[in-house]
Amino acid sequence: MISIDRDSPARADVHQLLSEHLADMFATSPAESVHALDHAALSAPSITFWTAREDGNLLGCGALKLLTSPTGPGRHGEIKSMRTTTTARGRGVATLMLGYILDDARTRNLERAYLETGTEDYFAPARRLYARHGFTECPPFANYVLDPNSVFMELRL
Image (cartoon, rainbow, N blue to C red):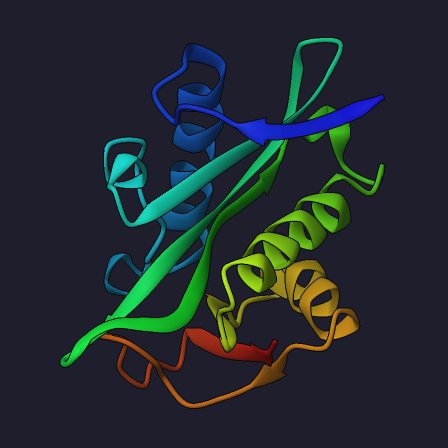
């Protein structure tokens, strides 16, 4: 059975998965268009980080970053670091993680969930996953700027 729980991005197996994630991002996108966070950044107080595991084995991870507005804490969140291990792909782990993150966002009474992903073919499965769950393209949010290598998406909760 797959379980999703809060976890530390610094945990050894998670750190390895996040390092692979960053390496893939830099291999597929120009450096200025890579917005993935490393394990240290994912430990920020504004970010909740989860892993999916089965019998203790890491299957994937995901995070929710609370977005702030100039006037104080906002009611929006950004999905970060959605990643599954190579061996877990095709098993529905990303769908489970996304659902878990969105349920958490709704529990926190967030109004919207945002995300940024790439335009390259490598990111097509991610874009399809998000679209299947109701995300639609939107203008850049938070501190992002228009970028031909980025797709910005939102979901009204």
